[in-house]
Amino acid sequence: MAGKEILQKFKKIADQARQIDDRNLYGDVLSLQSDVMELLEERNELEAQNSSLKQAADVAAKVKYEAPFYWLIDAGRRDGPFCQHCWDKDGMLIRLQRSSIQGVWSCRTCKNSYR
Image (cartoon, rainbow, N blue to C red):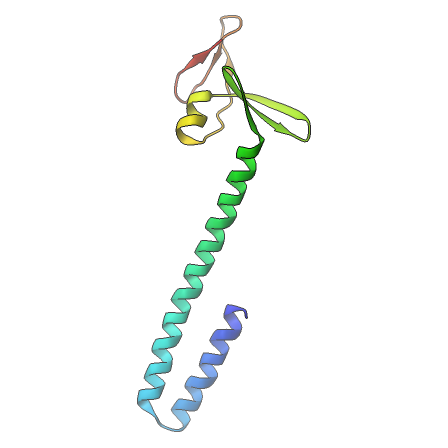
């Protein structure tokens, strides 16, 4: 059941409690409605977090290490290279830049260099 539908049911019950002039019941319904709203917000946050974790897992499954770099392999395409230190430490895919020295790649984030 969607959150909007749940809140509409609470409104209906609260209106009924007000009509029969039961202030205790009305207060309890409003308190319960507030608790449910908090739970719905928490659920939405957890769903967003879950989605983010799934995306991170999808990316991690595509990251392959070939010393000394990481590469992103997706649909047979190889993208990179990416910094070993940044991925291992922070899970960040930071693209390496070619150095002025032939065969050397540099990370502008952590300042490491790779051959």
